[in-house]
Amino acid sequence: MGNLVDRIIKGDMRAFDDLYMKYKLPVMAILSKSTGVKGDDLIDLFHSCTLALLENCASGRIKEGSLPDSNIRAYLIRTARNIFLAGIRKKERYGKFMLPLDDPDYPGDIEKQLAVDTADPNYEEKIEQVREAVWNMEAPCDELLMLRHFEKRSSEEIASLKGYANGDVAKNMVGRCMKKLKVFVIGKFEELGL
Image (cartoon, rainbow, N blue to C red; front, side, top):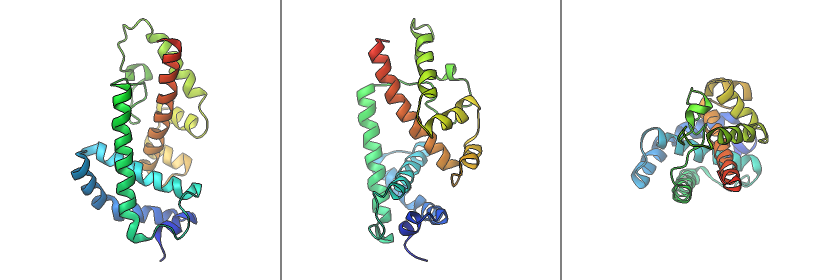
């Protein structure tokens, strides 16, 4: 059968599905106890750490033979904790500021997702800056965000169109693109004094 990570590095997505199912419950149980995260946020945290592992396999950061099956659980937990702590630091830095599109499964319009007051005198300009930023993002984020938020495609549809293993992976990818968009737009808002 072979080492799961080595099989993923060689492009075996069934190995990724096997890894995901094998470690989902034990890793989530440990993360719930150590971070206090529950429900959908806990699932999202697990998705993020497995997606990070997949990206590290694809990019060559994880080399063949460097992560035996006996160390996968520890790797996922460590990665998830790092993601969790980075999220806390980011919230402390940016406060409760939200952008449109923050919830990748929100079915509504972009305008309804903005967590700033619609009476804000800069509301329209902020909306336009977000739209422009989405259009100017690099692949695959530009297409993922347009599929999800402009064409209102489900995570499962996006997974099918983009060749991802399942809807959870697509949702995670959209979430990562949202993080990139948020960093860019917050910088743009600060630059424009909005």
